[in-house]
Image (tube, rainbow, N blue to C red; front, top):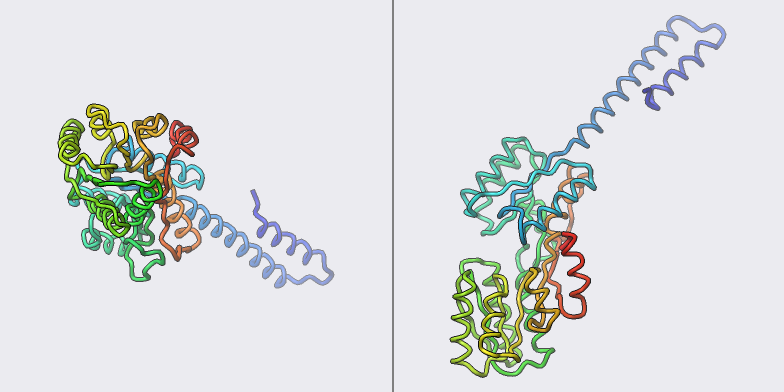
Length: 344
């Protein structure tokens, strides 16, 4: 197939040949011009092919199931829509060394871009980010930007950060409880106190509630739903004035069990993220609302941002916030329909 540049060059030669007094030297120049245009066209096609043959590795925090399944689905769909190859990899156990090893695998595979589900402080990724940069690999974060930060720091070694503002999420929970007219104590529980995001949610909510004149207290729990229910039930017996309880870092199961077993029908429950149990509880009134970080976007947007950077040199001036948003009785049916299709 002849490209437009080649066709134009051939037409130019044919025009010159038809002119009276056409000299051999002129023909030679015309043929040389034609050849150069053909080679230029071939080179341009090769460059376009190289641009389109983009490989992006998404280094997740866990297997592509449950919450992380939405991230993986978002990344995969972005790859399909943009025509780039996306590979989702993850450590068997989530530790910094294990995740860095996966990033090293992506570098060794000569990825064009890497998006990492960052879960620790920036310093943990600084060295591997520098190595990726030295290898000419675009490097971005599929995790929340620093709280309150919107405009991207030009010195940030992450090309972008895509996630929910966790401090804002905690404040949003508090604001909604205040608007609901909550009276009495609010207990804010964290099942993973070592998780910085969950702790920030809890601290921000407690501070905002106290600023509004509402008593709020932190409760440390484990990831076991049975133990959660037992500990929360004991807390509610000691503090009968408790009006609301928030689960910041796990499914709502233990809280729902404590509410049902103790007959605390008026206890307002709130949580985080989209899980089937929360959606069902919101529909039937056992849970008031949940904070959604729209995790499908957390998978989709890093692939889009990497692709647009690699193809067009575009860098977003702002960090991309996927949340927080609220899912309650007003929008739970619509969200549930999207969840069934894998889009939340």
